[in-house]
Image (cartoon, rainbow, N blue to C red; front, side):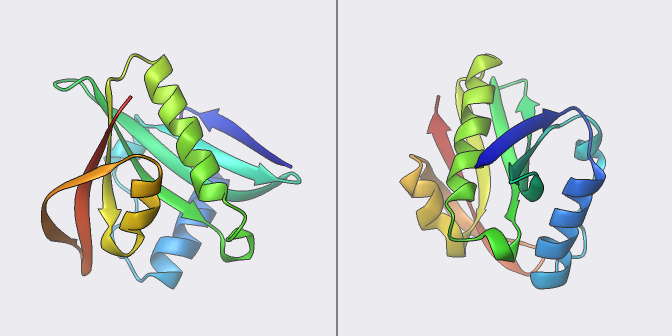
Length: 139
């Protein structure tokens, strides 16, 4: 059974998940940044083991929340944990008064975010070497 916990800081478990998925598997170089210091972080646990994570931060000008760094460890993929943690983040953003959720989605997973109600806009752009697209969802 999956359980999601929210944190006000970057945990060692989240560092491990993001390093494994984004740095080791996907070869990103700039994984950690100053946003981690103020973001709301979430970890999804399966049978007590950290299986995935996400973070979000507020865009004050737009009353929106940016959700990102969504990662699921390889051994837990295909369990729909990505959708579960995203839905928890969307719910938390709405509870905090957000009107819109924003993601900078890797183009290869655009369909995943569309299945959650996000709509793409603008041109494809590179984040490091990887094509991304801006996507939004009204809360």
